[in-house]
Length: 398
Image (cartoon, rainbow, N blue to C red):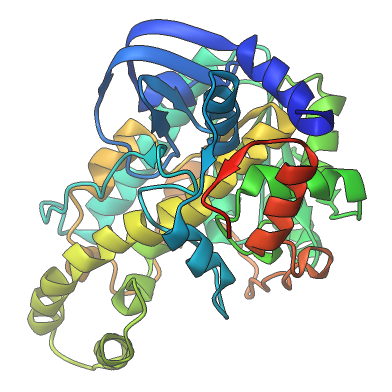
C-alpha cells in the first residue's frame, strides 16, 4: 500500500491494545489514540455506538480493521450485498451487520423495550438526571479536555444547560448558528458560540471516502474537515458532544418512524400520529408500535448517526459522544412507555429541570442542506478506485 493507507496502516499497527475482556464502554468511554482492541471476550450488546469485529479484533473504524486484516495477509473480501445497495438510486445507508468486507461484522442490537415509565414529569426528571450523571462520569474519564457541543435543535441546546465541570464551547453551522447564539444570549449562558463550516478540501474528501467504506451517502455526513481543524486547535484534547435521537424519544416523532421503508406502514403511522383518539387508545396503539421503533433505532439510526460519530472520531482523532446514549440514559429509554410520555414535545420540561427556570428556545430548527461537495462520492466505484490506487488487495470485484 502507499500514501494515505500506508500511513494509516502504520497508525493502526502502532495502536492495538490487548485485553482479556472488552465492552462498548472500553471503546467509547475514552480516547487515547487506540484504533484496534484485541480481546478474548466482548461483553454486552452495543445499541448505538459502532463496534466492528474481525476474528478477535474490535474497532469503531471499519477501515482500520480492513487494513489490519490486509497487513496480516488477507484481502478486502467485497460484500456483493453492500456494493449493490450502495449503487442503488436513493441510497442513504447500508444497515447490514455484515460489512463491506464479508469477514467483518458490526455487532450489536436494539435495546430493551419497556413500559415502566408512564408519567411525563417523572420521565423528564429521569432524563435530566441521567444526562447529568452520564456526562459527569465521562468528564471524569476524560480529564483535561474541552467539551464542544455540536448544536442545532432542542436536544443539543439542552446539553448547554448541563452542569459541566470542564471548559465548554458551542459549535453550530448555518442556518442554525444565529439561533444558537440567540439561545445562549436569551438564557444568559456564559458560553462561547463558534461557527462551523464545511470547506472544500480535496485531500480530506479523499480520506472521507476511504473512511466511509461506501456505508452511506456522504452528502449527509458533513463538517468533517472543520471538526478536524477544531480538534487540532485543541491538540486533540477535546470531546465532541451531539444530541443524537433524543427527539425520537421525547416528541411524537416516533409515531411515524419505521425501518425499512414500507408505504403501508408509513401511511398507517401518519394516521396514528394525527388521530384525535382518547389517551388510552393512543397509549395501547403506541405499545404495539414501540418495538418496531426501537428496532429501527438499531437497524437505521445506529448505522447512520452512530456510524457518523465513529467516522468523525476516526478523522479527527478525538472522542465523539452522544449525551443521550450513556448507560443511565439507556436505562431510561429502555423503560419508557412512549405512548404515555411522548405524545407531544416535552423537551422544554427537561430544559427547565436542567436550568432551574423556564428556557427560551428558537421557534424553528432549519436543517442544513445536503453537502454538494460530497455529491457522488459515495458510489462504490469511487471507493474502489481509491483503494486500488493505494494498492489495497481486493477480492470479489464490483
